[in-house]
Structure formats: structure tokens, C-alpha cells
Length: 400
Figure 1 (cartoon, rainbow, N blue to C red):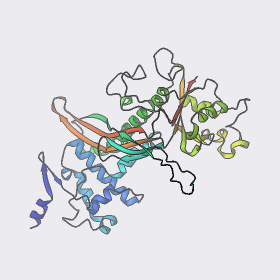
Figure 2 (cartoon, rainbow, N blue to C red):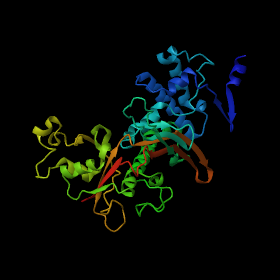
Figure 3 (cartoon, helix red, strand yellow):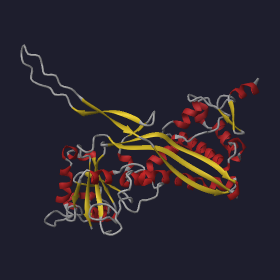
Figure 4 (cartoon, rainbow, N blue to C red):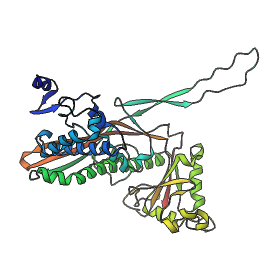
């Protein structure tokens, strides 16, 4: 009878057996939940480790030595006992078949620029979000007179997901113990690779042909995933010459954004290393320092911290993906390479769509005696408003 019960929960796929857990299973819920509980995080980490090693070695997780310790952990942990998931047939045989929130959150935590913008789950691809393009008009009521009709302008934002992929070949010679030792490196690398691609595309992306930067030619370059902040600003003429770099010219860049630049809490500067260095010694038009002195910023002064937290009340987000080899117009042409740029963005002006979260797959290449590990996610990025008439991004250019 016990065997028959187990057979009902097992499906055979490509010669391997996989437990078919209900999405509402308590143990699955624990694996997928977002939590700060140390016991939940530890459980998710162990499950992720088991999943990654099984994919790398192309073996059923239950064949691995580490599965025994994982199962023992399930039997002994107070968290699992509290959820009644350690009974045979009710969770003890469970094996992880996907990543937990822990690893997905790790990718999110690696994001800096991309983390500025809201994200939604995409139920379809493409996915259209309804949006309002204009407001209705309220008028003074006149006695015995019908009011004039007004309407709400409607439009939509279309999110088209693009696959972001990371490919790593691993030698056959790796044994289970070696893979387990490598797990922290493997997980960090997966998270960093996917996060870095999103960051780069968000700042430097251009899906036009040719790309605005003459050195972006490969079809696989992540900077061809979608149009990024720099492209949107340049294409719509939302740039300002910042060859004179001081507090007044930065304020003019904010002013250029009109109503979208009114609330500093909704804005962000995205600065590369050269701009960060300039901001640390920023002056006003009269050459008076505005960032370094104790009397102006108190304990936040850069003379104490070495960091630039905000300028004009707007947070400064550092990014290594701000190019510092651009021409005066803010693009790379291979000729003039002495300038950098400074994007200023309205953080609720753009949106990400996640069609599929992080997935890891593997394939054995016999002739090369290697295991190909491929991690991928499907992501979309787009402005939430018609950018030609809504200045939700601005770009300072010609910064030497």
C-alpha cells in the first residue's frame, strides 16, 4: 500500500524520477516563501544546494550523498516538524525541483540600478499594462445646465520579455564533494551574471540596429536586450552639456525634467567612478565646496565618509556600467573617447516585467567531456509613460 501511494506521486521523466509536489504542499510553500527567519533561510539554502549539485552532475538528487543529510535535516529541524512535513509520504520524500526565494532574492539584492524600478510578474508574453495618458476635467457646476463631458485618456505599456542567459562549462572530473565546495562560488556567479546583464542593459541598452555604440556588434550582447536609459535620453533630446560641472548645472538637469523632477525622493542619479570623484568635491557657481564641509552636511560630509549619499536631495547610485569612453553626445564612436555621462531618472517612470525567474539547466557534451550549465531568466524593461512627451530621464553629457 505504501509503494502504491508513492507511485501516485512519482512521474518518470527522461529516465529520472521526480516527486510531483502540489504547489500548496507545506514544504513547497516553505521553499518558495520570502522570509527573514533564519530557519527558513537555512532550509532554502540546503534545498538550493541540493538542486544545483543534482543539475551539475545530472543525477537524481536522492542518489547524492548530500541528500541523506538533507533528509536528516528535514527530520530534525523544528521548522519542518512544526509544518508536519517530515512524515513519510507527506514531505519527507520531497526533493527540490526549482530555486527558492533565497536564490532569487540573491539576484535581486545584487541589483543596484535595476532595483530602483518596480517589477511585476508577467502572466503572458508580451504583456500589456493599462495606463492613463490624460486626465478628465472637473468644471464648475452651473444651475440648470448640463455639465460638459470629459474623458480619461487611456493607453497601454507593452512588456516584451527577453531571455538573459549565462553559460558555464564544467569538466567531467568534478565529483560531488568538489561541487559542494564550489557551491558558494557557483551561486554567487549565477546571481552576479544575471544581475550584471540587467544593470548593463538598463543603462546602456539599445535594441535598434545598429546599436548607438559602435563597439556593440554581437547579437548576444546583453546591451541589445532593450532600450536603456542613455538611449531614451539621447533619442528624445533629453541631454544637457555638463562640461561645466557644478551644483548649478546639475540643478538645471533636474529642472529640465519639469514636473517629473519636482520630488527628489522619486529621482536617482546614476554615477560612474569619474562622476563620483567630481561629486565628492562638488562646488557651486562661485567655486565654494558644497559636499565636503562639516558645517553643510554634518556627519554625512564626504570629508568623513568618502561617499556621496545625495545631491540636491536626490540619492546617488554608483554603477560600474556608466561608460567613460564616450563622445560629447554621450555615445561611443571609437574616435572621441574622453567623456562620461550622468543619467538622472524618475524611478517610477520605468518598469520591469519578470516572465520567468531564474532557471538552471544542464547538458552533457560527451565529445568535450564537459557538463554545460546554463542559467537563464526572461525579463522585460520599458517606460511606463510615452517618453516622447514625458521627460522621465535626463542625461548629462560632455563630462570630462
